[in-house]
Length: 309
Image (cartoon, rainbow, N blue to C red; front, side, top):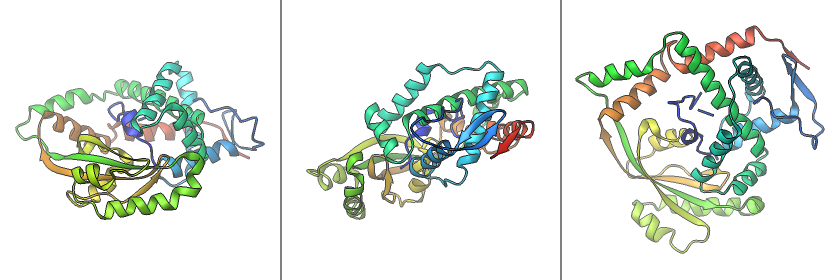
């Protein structure tokens, strides 16, 4: 169910995972109550419900941190404002459009799919805006504290031994469910996808024979992807699958999907070296943007007035 956010915002801008607001305004259509006030900015139960749906239905994560994520989002938006860091509407709309196209949807279909799982296009756009802006906040702080990733990568590429990683050739099978018929067709489509997945032999057979003639089923090539570049929502499932096998089937806003591993090999070159470095750097020490983001967030929380109603 998770949409391809990693493609949308790279962790190079890292923001990847830390990749993609001022708070979305309270919906006049929903009589929600104020749950938190963060430096004077309210967070409502409706805001939290939409974030919980976004986490559980779109990102396939626990919905439990929804309130904390909304608090952090407000803090990030306030810090962006303090530092005069803005994100143009055109950037947000382009990112949202990229998200739709990377998931094989029109903008209208994406917005409808998000609404069908309990969140909204506006909520996701607010999330995107804050993630882009927060990434710029972190980059500015990193530069100010002497974090220089480019120099470190350059030194690594000059070393005699370059690291290696796995390169995958992948196909994605999508059993589409129209949003208005989701409850009616979900179980049926899941059985169909599971049957095709269990019978998977190779990618060409999957594409040209197994799903041929099936209605609202598409198999699309994802191309060659290095392990550090795997979509975060699929990475663990792909790595857990057998070579020349397929991942488990899972629900997504589009319907039921699985990814087929056509082939895999060990790769080692300059691009691999840089990607591996960035992956390792993102998970190590206080110099990483991820660690910097955690520390920065703690600082913001410590000096802010966060009232629970």
